[in-house]
Amino acid sequence: MDVYHFKLHFVNDIIYFIKSSYEYPYVMSLIRGRVNHVHSDKYKIFYHVQPLEFTDTIEHINQYINDGTFRFIDTINKRVTDRKIHIDAKQPITSYIIAYPYLLFDIAAPLAFSNLQDAIDARKIMHLRTIDMLQSTINTLRLIN
Image (cartoon, rainbow, N blue to C red; front, side, top):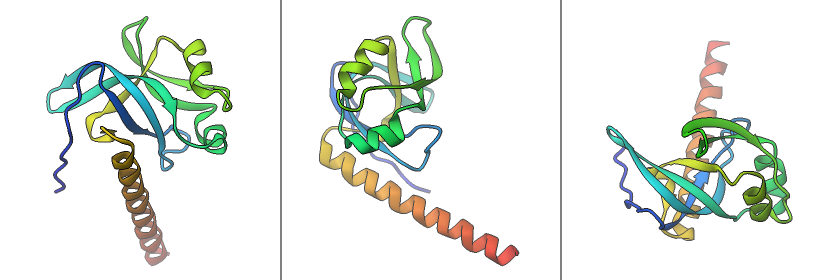
């Protein structure tokens, strides 16, 4: 069993977080944001985060974020929602804030980091574990056939 250690963040903290769309669940995007609300659901902690910067390249934003479906907190309806978003990759944060000022990203605490380097390191580890998992699945399927 894995034991996760993470720093607890508070309202107005600036964090870096990892998020993937439903369309590309194995491709993690890196985003900087401000915590607007901290929510606890029994044993799990979640942050509702207003994005401040999409840190990936324009190509990454166009391919994996644009027209992607993400899990959000809709601050108007006060509920969790899955929404497809489209932003201008050349001015991603400006276009996001104009188009979706009421949508906050819903982030699990283990995917939130205090600094950019910790977030980059975690994303690399997650990519490696995903590759290992997919390779294991391929090997199992080869044995079945």
